[in-house]
Length: 382
Image (tube, rainbow, N blue to C red; front, side, top):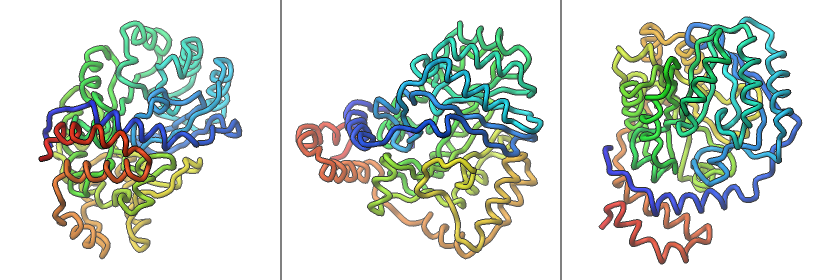
């Protein structure tokens, strides 16, 4: 799926769509300003501490067709620091890696003011864990921030996570609405002196067929590991409210990827890469309510076995865990294999047709009449 990156009309349209879909979204409440989730990952115990902020800046601009981490009214710097302190104090077991992040970007000062960020980093340094990780966007990485991380968290190995989603610029532009993510990813890797890089890769982006989604994820993992990432995390998509995925799902035009697709992604990767790959958010039972409408799954008969085996792979990415995944069988796996081989219309034509439907049903036909021929030309549709 190597294509020339186009931004203009696809990004313009998807941004209009996402802004409208999120327009009536209620703000997040203050009843749960932080939560902690534990699991076994990468050979140790992993704790994720999420805390409330005003929300992701890109979300406010109408980006990312799959995301809904929510928006909140103003949260003060003192409150942000308090939320993180309370969350850290709640952790009740030995931790090998501590992840601390808002539902957005830790280094975005519109979301986490600089004073709060520095307070958080000092709290993290005092916490007993070998490693510290967080998520941000590539454009928030600067030399001064990297120096600050080293100065304020000298006791831990540090890793930063970028939401790459896909290494295919066409898919980023036309399906994810995250233009330029791969270029920004590559540029930021040159500044991460002494800090490891985690690449978040999506499985099941909007408008992709099952086969296309698997292919895109495999290629994106390989691209990320070849362009500076120390670890690739594969995220199968859930359907969340106030997103394009939800709009498509409600009309029978989208379904979350099967867990068999996740297994297939792992199977197709070069065995030499497996120790540098993990999986995340493939379950829907993590405890805190993430507002999920539909999740990756299999049939009820094999679901628990598949999830348990995926848990084993997440706990430790080994060839033994991979072999166990590949030995799993079920009637629903054979049905998925048939779907995998179903021929489809070319991707660009399918995307264009879906855009037209979205424009019609969401009241954007005036925009469509003016711009659809330009969009078709950008997509090379005759």
